[in-house]
Structure formats: structure tokens, C-alpha cells
Amino acid sequence: MATETKDKKQTTALEDYRGYRELVQQYEHDDTLTTLNLGPTHPATHGIFQNILKMDGEVIKSAVPTIGYIHRAFEKIAERRPFYQITPLTDRMNYCSAPINNMGYHMTVEKLLGITIPKRAQYIRVIMMELARISDHLICNSVIGVDSGALTGFLYVMQEREKIYDIYEEVCGARLTTNMGRIGGMERDLSPKAIHLIEEFLVRFPKVWGEFENMLTRNRIFIDRTEGVSPISAERALNYGFTGPNLRAAGVDYDVRVMNPYSSYEDFDFEIPVGTNGDIYDRFMVRNEEIWQSLKIIKQAVTNLPEGSYHADAPHYYLPPKQAVYTSMEALIYHFKIVMGEVEAPKGEVYHSVEGGNGELGFYLISDGGRTPYRLHFRRPCFIYYQAYSELIVGSQLSDAILTLSSLNVIAGELDS
Amino acid sequence: MELTNENVLGLLIDKFGEDRIRDAYDPDGIMTFFTDRDTIVPLIQYLYDEDALQIRFLTTMCGIHYPDQKDKELCVMYQLHNLRHNYRIRIKVSLSAADPVVPTLTGLYATANWMERETFDFYGIIFTGHPNLTRILNVEDMEYHPMLKQYPLEDQTREDKIDTFFGR
Image (cartoon, rainbow over all chains, first blue to last red; front, top):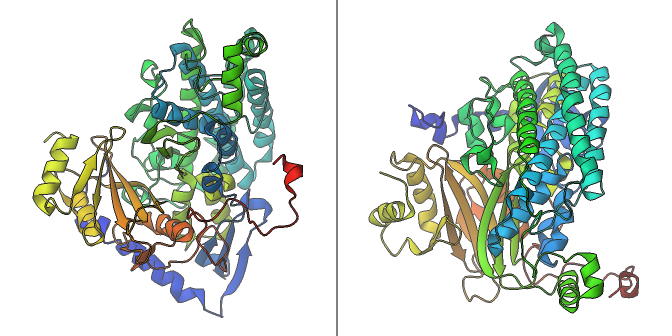
């Protein structure tokens, strides 16, 4: 892997970084340059981001980002809530792929509680997480198209995202902020209709995505706009804490699904695409290929879906079925205790990470034996790699800066938590 | 050398001494130990430089508040990762609330910049040598560090929220 380097100074001393900071400081208060407020609410930023740019004509001389416009204090709220009520908070971080956040959080709590999940529930989770990854990458890639002037593809593939949301709706009842699954498994089994919808999606989507790919991947105008724009070396990307597709585009094959398999990912056969320069075109291509790999995983999971229960046998944490609540005393007690948040978790400290849409989504949970987490820290990949943004755009043109932002797939909700 | 918790701990104790690498435990497969603030930067630099370890990825960092522990009220957690051998390690530094100062890691990891600003913002831990230690997610004129345990979730002085509307 690219972590090894011959010249130690380059990686550790951050000469580039210092050079870049000096550049920013040099131009930050230069009155001969134009100040441009890019954001916070600008249609091209796809979220609430502010960058105060110093422009020399069309060229960006310095960029100072401000974040926190939609900070909602999730880490603080999580310290006052019972464990099952924290799931809806995680939805609202990366809202383009909410099921991955939900299930990552559930797996963290399960790790703390020491619950083993049946194979069937794990496979259902894999299917939903890969669908979420497709919808996440689909938005990112089609928005790169929009920002480089191709709106049609975006509107076309957006219809397919609606089909994915139909599947979510069938599985959990919600579409965008899904609150899918529970601590201990899924809230219900995959219905025949859900399986039908997934199979239908697996037939139709490859054609649509193939058409979208044909439109952009070999398109001269698109390549001219994206190739070699805002590249980042593997070394710099690692130093900035990049993970996920943005790191793989720079050439490092780090994927949590393979390095620390969770939820039975070791059962599936798939490949990890990597790029070479880490420029916009590479990020686009890596996400493209990941969509195909996700389809491959879903196909395998649907074909080999094991029989069995869709949830673990953990009555203290998993809600009993509603019929039982009305007829059995034991179920009623468990139901009451769980809903009122009177279930205590054991003491412990766990870190669990999943491969989110944008990279390693980690949950660091400390429990002191109470009913709520003592401390819950989210490792949000967007927050960590967005700090490289100003370094990536200084020296480039304004229109490239917009394209860089959409190719990094920065999601405001995840950035600000 | 195979990277196991025992091997790495042995190597670090040989290098830094038992009084600087202390209270090691293994809560979830990731070795965790405490060190002090004078050791943290040389230690992480050593993890980076040493060929046998090559721990060169800062996964995450956060603050923790334990109001009941006298003179160890605050804690900074660093989690690092060796991507080549998939080995993770967690390091903690305890600080007293009266003197919450740690040296910065930004000289080694560019990614520590915003992580340290976030920790400062929420816990008031000061990272000496940081190039721009200002609030990051909260407003600049906020007068307290909101993740400290003494602050309740909601502002108790608010009058526009009546408890009966919220079922309390």
C-alpha cells in the first residue's frame, strides 16, 4: 500500500501544508483581490457550506471554509437518550445513505451487548446497505454531471433512486430518513413484495446505469472538465484522513468491508476499484465501478438468502411482536421497559466502523452501565476530509471548485453532525 | 514482528518506560492505554517512524469528560490505524480541568487540525501550537464548552418551551 515512503520529511513535516497556509495567509487580507462569498446558501454547493474566496479574476488565491451551519448537537443529544432512540439521529448524518448509518450504529450497540445476529438478518442488512451505497454514489456521480453541464442524466437516474426508496418503504416504511432495523436485527422480514422489487431493480437498473455511463465516461467534454482537476496524492490523502471512494481514487485500496468484514461481508465475492491520480475523473470512475460491485453483492445476497430468523433472540433489547404484547405478560413487560428506555446496557467501550457512502463511518461508544451512552462519538468521514477542500481548490478556477465539491460528495448533515 | 497487542505494548514500554505507558487494557480488541501529555507527540511520532509498527493513519480523536475523577476530569482519545497490517491502537491522555493543555498533532497529521478544533470547541481542551484553534461547529461568541457534563441538554432559562407540550 502507498503508506510506505522513501523520504520521511515529505510525509511528516507537511511542507506542502505549510506552503499552502502561507499562501492563504498572504492573500487572505489582500485588498487588491476580489472577495467572493461562495455560500452558505448557493445553489451550486448542494448544501450549506461557506467558503470565503479571494479571487484574482477567475483564479482562486485563498479559501477559508466555515462549517457548522446545520450543527444539531447529535453527540450531546445521544448522551440523554435511550439506545434505540439514537437511531433516528444517525439517519440525519448522511441522509443520502441513511440505512448504512442506522445499521452501523446498531452493530456498534450489538457489539457492546454481545449479541450475535442470525445470518438471514445479516444478509438483509447487506442488501439494504448496498442499495444505500448505490443511491449515495448515484447522486454524487449524477451531480458531477450537473455541475459540468449535463442535467439530463441526473434527472434520468433520479427516477431509479425513487425505485430504491420504494424498496426502503416496503422494508421499513420510510423513504429518506429510514430509521431502518433495530438493535438485534430487522424490524420485519423481507416481504415477497420487497424481494420482487429488489429483483426488478436488479434487472432494470444496470441498463439505466449503463446508459448514464455511456453518456459521460468517454465523453470528450466531460473528460476535459474533470481529468487532472484537483488531484491529491495517496500520501496527502492518507495524511488528511481520507477514506472511502476518495481515498481509493488516489490509489489506496482501503475498504472497511474487506479489511474488517462485518455483517457477513466475507461471504461475498466483489472487487475494490482503485484510481491513480485522485482527480475528479478518478473519483467518478471509482464510484461508477462501486455501483456495479454493489449490484453484484446484492445479487449474491438475494440468491443465497439463508432461511432463519430476521432478528436475534435478545428479549431485553429487541421489541416483542405486537400480538404478543397484547396477550402475554412477559412480552408486555419487555415492551414497556424498552419503550420507556429502562433497559440498562453493560459497562464497556467499543469502536465499530462500517464502510459508509463516503468512507469509514465509525462509532466510538462508552457505556458506564446506564440507560444511555456515556459518550458516543461519530467518526464522520465528510468532516475529516472536507478540511482538504481549500488546499484542493487554491490555484484552480471557480468552476472547478464547484466540481471538486460535488466530486468529494460532501454531505452537509454528516459534516456538521 | 507480528503486530499483536502484547508485542506492541512490550515495544512501547521498552522505549518509553512503564510509568509513561500505563493502565493498558483491551475493551474491544483494540489495545488502549494511558500516557501523559509530554509523551503523546513523541509517542505518536515513534509509532509513525518505527518500521516494525508503521502506524500512520489517524482514524479519529475525541474528548471525554469524567466530572467525578479528581484531577483527571478530561480525557483526549486518539485512535490510530496501521493500514498495511490492519492493526488499531487507542491512546488516552488524562488532564485536569484546571489545566487542560495538550500539544498539537498538526505537525504530523494534517487531519488533526479540525479534529483538535472540534475537541477544543466541545470540551475546551487547548492544543498548544495549533495553527488556528478557534471554534468550528458552534458560534464564535459561545461562552462555554457544551459537551461538558455539567451542561444540561436544553437551555434551562428558556421560557418558550412549556413542559406539558412535550409530555414532561
